[in-house]
Structures are given as structure tokens and as C-alpha cells.
Length: 179
Ligand code: PRP
Ligand code: MG
Image (tube, rainbow, N blue to C red; front, side):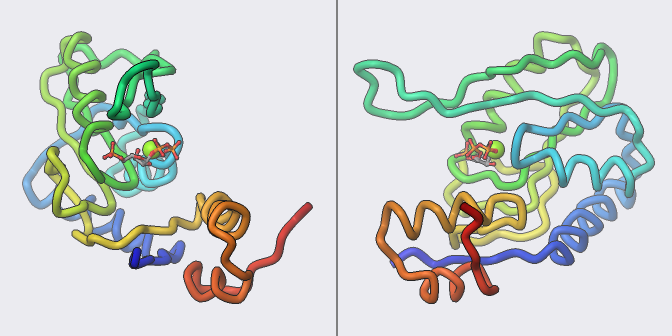
């Protein structure tokens, strides 16, 4: 059975603070923070605050299943607008699972001539092919973030047929549907 890990807003803040601490204790000065939409945006914004790095950009990476392809692969669907040439860039996502999203992000950003690309994810799955330079915690559980709770509830109730009571045990609080 899938293990679920509901994450609170407080834990998100603590995780980002931990990552910021790792970065500053290594004496690294980040010039630009790039949040990977959508899940990486909120951690990226918090890191902008904690690191005192006001310059941010966003990159949207989505999983697409190409016709005739067996495996899903992520593609960049909204390119970067902020200038990263000769800059130290911190790419931020909420979780590295297969690690494909961060790998695609790095490959994409490399073309814009940054001085250095560093990666951070709140959570890291042990099987990820990409190990972020900075992460708060490693876990093999399915993480339910405060920003994707409704999506998770929707999937568990409507697609997997769980009751609201079972779902609220997973998401960690009482669930109500807004129709
Ligand atoms: C999720 C998550 C990471 C990515 C991790 O995003 O937010 O970006 O998957 O998976 P990977 O390491 O296997 O590539 P998703 O594509 O579901 O989109 P979202 O952020 O818009 O929810
Ligand atoms: Mg994502």
C-alpha cells in the first residue's frame, strides 16, 4: 500500500529554512531563484525571502505521454524569461521523485549560460536519478503538500473510491468538498 505523508505549512517553512541554512553555511550567494511550476513555486518564494534573493523566475515542466511512448517524460511548457547569464541559479522544486523534472530543468537552463546551477527540493525520494544539492528530507512516502490537497482528495475519492473519512486520515484534517 502507498504510504502518505501529509505536510503542514509549518513543515514547509521549516524545510525551506533548513535548505536556506545549508546554502548560507556553505557561503553560497544565489543570484537568481527559479521555481519549477507549479509545485516548486511556493518553496522558491520562501527561499527568496530566507536567502534575501529578490530575483526570481519560473519554469513550467509538465509530464507528457507521447503517442506510442511507454514512459512519461517531462517537457518544458513555459520557458524562462529572467536573465541567468553568468549568474548563480538555484532551481527549486517541491519534490524530486524520478528526478526527471530537475534533470530537464538543468538541461534547459544550461543553454542560457549560467555561471552555476544548483538544485533544491523540499523532499527527495531515495530512487531519484537526480540528487538535489540541497533538500530538507528524504522519504519514500507519497507527499501531500498544502498546495495540492484538493487534487489528492479528488483523485482518492473520485478515482480510487475512498471515503472522505479514509481520505481525511491521509490528508491529516477534515475534508470538505467545494462544489
Ligand atoms: C511533480 C512535482 C515535481 C515533479 C517530481 O510535478 O511537483 O515537479 O512532479 O517528479 P519527478 O522527479 O519524477 O520528475 P507535476 O509534474 O505533477 O506538476 P505540478 O508541479 O504542476 O503539480
Ligand atoms: Mg512539479
